[in-house]
Amino acid sequence: MQFQAKTGKMTIEQKKVAVKKYLFILSIIGFQLINFIIFYVYVNANSILMAFQWRKGSGEEYWTLHAFELMFSQFSNGGSEMLIALRNTFIYFGLGLVMLPISFTTSYFMYKKIFGYRAFRILFFLPSVLSAVVWSTLYKNIIGVDGPIAALFQQINHLPEPPVFLADSRYALGAVLGYSIWLGIAGNFIIFSGTLTRIPESVIEAGKLDGVGWLRELWQVILPLMWPTMGTMLLLMTSGIFTSSGNLLLLTGGAYDTNSISYLIFQQVYNVAEDSNTYNYGSAVGMFFTLLTIPVVFISRYFINRIEDVEY
Amino acid sequence: MRNKIKRSKSETVVFSVAFVILVLFALTYILAYLWGAMAGCKTHPELVLHPFEFPEKWMFCNYIDAFVMLEVNDTNMIGMIGNSLWLVFFGALFNVMGGCLMAYATTKYQFHGRLALITINLITMIIPIMGALPSQYRTYHALGMLNSPLILAAYFGGFGSINLYMTAFFKNLSWEYAEAAFMDGANHYTVLFRIMIPLAKGPIVALYVMQAVAIWNDYMTALLFLKDMPTLATGIYLFQATTIYRARLDILFAATILSSIPVLVLYIFFNKTILTNVSFGGLKA
Image (cartoon, rainbow over all chains, first blue to last red; front, top):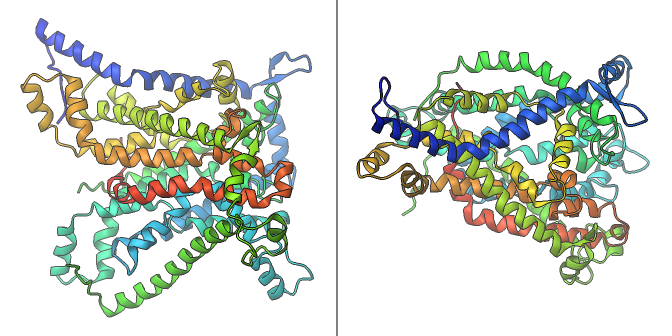
């Protein structure tokens, strides 16, 4: 049920009620609307304009397609940072897709009260609770040249020296992915757990009384109830395909063939003077990939909308 | 009395295998964290030469020294904690308030533009616009938000995940209490602040804690927009590029572990609230 103003001809009293309602609504969403206009509409509109601008040595900006020309020249240049970033973006996205059912499975076991689930619930949330700065600092040192993993790797592969995983193009991408797998096993744990705990106990109990086994319960009761949430997450993930990335700033700084598209854009701003043309280049790259995202979103939404919404 | 869970044979086998895998992963988290805590108790040479051995002498004083020695851009650890605290407190408050009020308005009221707002929320969530960072930086600069608490204005948004979570909650929240209150002469604000917000206390607290943790751990915002006001997460990252770092790796670990304690405490107290109050359903307009 919602608060509805009466339609048709309104009396003065009804008009007063409607005005009060609108003033109330405006008072609780006004700030957010201003925020949206400035930080979303203006920022993005300006970003589009920046993609078509370039700065002369004198500082004067002019309209041009130069940023796009530069970007496309990167595409045709085999082995360019752009191509490496694009390839890696797909790899990071693929890993995200693989980790989604894995993290659901982890949440499922805790929902089904696996032995020690209370402790797991705290421990598996640690990767989300503690800063990536903390984890990456620990990870970098544990897999570092003096660490046990490098020593083990050296022995297994009979290498003359322990590998420097995060500073060697042969291993760096694997090491970045390893970090995501290590900490991602319980990714989305909060959302999955929240949704699982909302499943009415009566539904599960009714299944049990009908002699439904655990596998059938998972497949035919729990998973269908999870689809709307899972679908939403899949949609958000696929529509963010070009934003997929590893934790590059903290692990490799995008070096050693680990770069991604979103990090490439970040590099155009971070520690770069504000009047630099890299800002325009970053805007052009961003605009191009946002346009590529739109058909992906529509295709994803088509499939997601086929999923029955379940209210419980 | 605790109910013992009965499992079938196949279930027991699968759950046993899962248990072993979960234990192994959990152990890696615990050991990594404990190693970090131990590394913070070593001397620098010891940490470089024998990183995985127990310290000869436990240097707990490193944890106190970190408060002074962890210094970036003329801000020491105490200053960084201060920066983190105001950003976390107000940032999470504005973020949750903005999303919650927008979700309440669009879920519980019929008004012109309501559908547009719902559609905007969907579009902003499902089409992530890339490459706006350069423009964002210039806009913040133009508005004087760089290196200023004015950055908090950017947190008062109404769209995004908070809106999504709260929309799911408000949709399932009965409007009958509100109707009864309106009949008794209550106005819109009374209904919102005296009835609906208290009823939504669970998810609001859960989202606030989640946002607080996310902002405490966010190193990117301060790295880009608050260079002269580094937060603790940013400070620890930037410290690794300083010269002191090369001589005092122990301080880095002590500070890293110290920075994690507030969020750990917060999570231990609120984990049940978070895990039982946060969920969302489909994304259909």
